[in-house]
Amino acid sequence: MEQFAQDGQDIKIIEKLVTKVQDMLTPGEKIDYIAVQKKPAVTILPDSITISNKRIFMCEFTKLGLATDFEIFGWQDIKDIAFKEEIFGSKVTVIPFTGENLSIDYIPKVQARKLYQYIKAALENYKKAELAAEKEKIVIAPTVAKEVIIERPENNTPVQPAVTAPAAPQAYGSAQPTPPASIQTQQPIGSTPTVPPVSAAPIVPPAAAKEEEDDEITLKLKKLKTLFDKQLITQEEYESKKREVLSSL
Image (cartoon, rainbow, N blue to C red; front, side, top):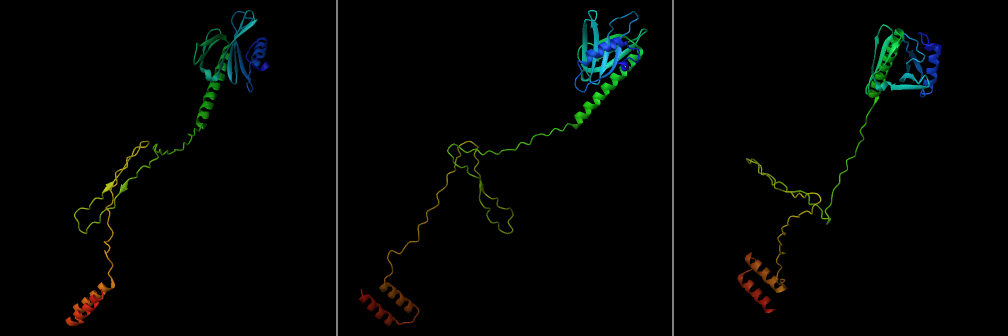
């Protein structure tokens, strides 16, 4: 208790405050400094400000010490601290981010100065820790795999792909190239595709078959005529052989 009474604090008030505040400390939290009000007149139960490494406890004894009102702020809730030295002590004001400012007057000047130093240092350390935490944050956006969905028409009719006709050969020295003719069929996904009419290929009749196969007599006649045309046989020989062949019909 003596460490909190080095600047003229009332040891009895310190004992009461430490007992009450210790019951409210969280794990890892400890009391750093206690400033106690000291009015010109005798004050049995003065107001006080207790500082821990995490919070500020502003205490007011009421109902002759039977009740105690605490206003507690974390460092993240405090915007600033101010104090004003007066004839009898100093007026210390805690400025929160929200709500009204809270002040306790008649704080001894030595205690008020130390209180100001403790609070300013604590606020500065909190801001540095907060800034360091922000810098260490690494936000990684989840990689979303893009799924390609190919919708099929209800009747399962395949979508006709674009068909490009081969380019016609270009003659050497032509002034302008002949652009390739292309036929493209595009169908919206999810709709029944329209298949372009396919022109029927012209039916090419097979080579006309001979109505009748050349028989042996016809072949002989043709051979005789060929021999005669080549002047391998005479006219008389040709006529004679021809008659012999025809006589066999």
